[in-house]
Image 1 (cartoon, one colour):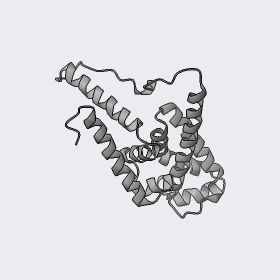
Image 2 (spheres, one colour):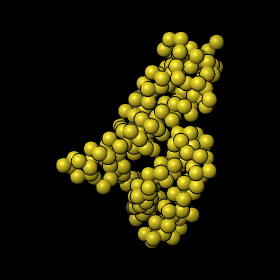
Image 3 (cartoon, one colour):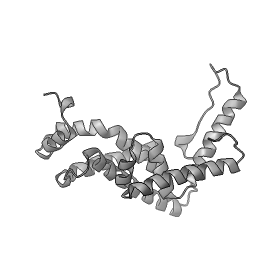
Image 4 (tube, one colour):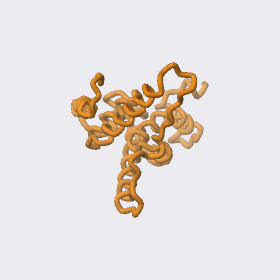
Length: 198
């Protein structure tokens, strides 16, 4: 039987018996989702990659404790989220006590305006860049509980139930946090003069 036709549960069982290829397949299947969860928490692709690697290592070491109460994906995403949050806390402490100032915009978010091949004016494109920067700023200013829920939901990769499991919060709370985060971001954009912010 081809490994691509095997369920996650079967791969977990094989991996528990020492089949490293089975765990490798689990990593391949869930790499993108794990990376996006870490990226939502950290905002930096490099830090997210490190957190994702830590999450896969932790999952491998804890494989015996996986009881199957949730799907393997949900269990793995929860581990990834906690790895990323722990990394974020360490980075926050480092920035707080570092003699170097924290930049307003991380280098990963630098954008260049590409004008060639577009029928839009440079002013229109500059307006898009400014709007995107103001949206990012409004999201960054959210309390962490609202920001984390919004970023995970906005990624489009996770069901609300998965977000609830990852953040260890009731489903209703997650739905409220996402709705509240959207409301606050919209209000902040309106306050900055944007009139057409759905």
